[in-house]
Length: 454
Image (tube, rainbow, N blue to C red; front, side, top):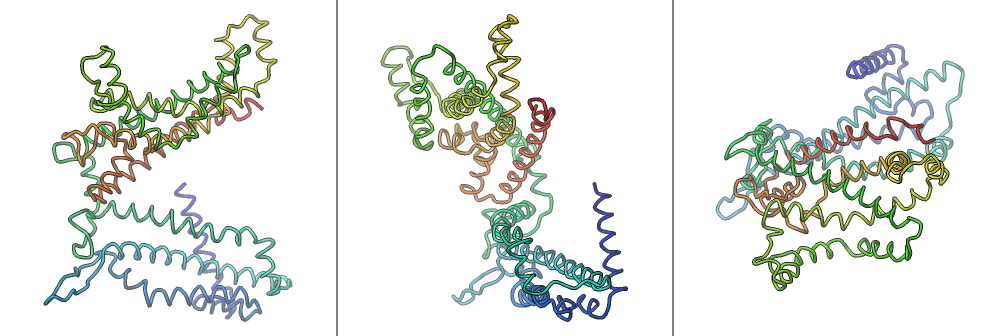
């Protein structure tokens, strides 16, 4: 893979040199003045577009970008302070990091546009040497609504994805290599680069390190995702099979009752469940009233019991979704397969194992993958039920016994303002989700045997 990219890079460098050596004065001038070649050849629209990009970039760098890029290596050295009751404003590490990163990306984009400008000149020269005429300006503009309409349509969405998705992710990755926390809040207390120190801290074991806490939270996150996904999947499928079974009456009623749990907003139902299982809640109250228990059951204060309760509550939430999906899929399985299996003497379990389950796994494999990755980052259920509690003094940064990586990250960001370690945890969450997704994806029947049910 690396050799492929290196080869492509070498090919581009060679083509840039060849274009300059074989090009005319118009092409060579375009190496410094974007769009000069197209402008002199009558391609006004293309030429002005390239020239505008160059002028805008120069204006940005002179008036704004260079100010932040020049301080990007240190993230600022002059703190905001007061002199004789007058505030003297200095550097702002946060803005330097954000706009410095944006400037670096714009420089890379500028190089890409420069390369496209050179390629445009080469294409025009090749066309003219072959005796072809260049498209007129009206045709170029019309192509934006015809052959190049995809670029016109995607321009705004791509810009939005870059500003609100790509740039924040890159910013978070950069924060992981700084000392940005509650003791380094710009502009009064600047933060700076610290290299891999935060990652070393994450895997440092002992009373001062994050290693033990990270492994415990990671282990619970994986256990939670496994049970939350597969228990809901198989129990939801079982409920759908039972409701669809011949002879069952009031099928619409049972489906409606289950769907009601979806209709109720999740934060309402989960907060109600939390109160219901509290020490002074309905469940403990009635169990003590009936004399079944002498003291309240610690549903939310005992670590193991809290985790079990969360998984059970999630079953109540997740089964209706899977039941609806499974109901539609079960109706599409050819009845002839079951009739043939009955004639051959197959038991209901054998029919489920050989017909129903393989079909369901094949069709719902991608859904199962998205559910698993979604449960790895399932913030709502954990935070609304327990907020990660019960708390433990042995765990770092207020991590609780039921915290997932994502809820622990939230606590470090909002409660402790430990942005540097939160960024590191964010990177680790991405790695965990990416690795598990790739492993599970390659295990899906629909991937291993794409034509199996065609």
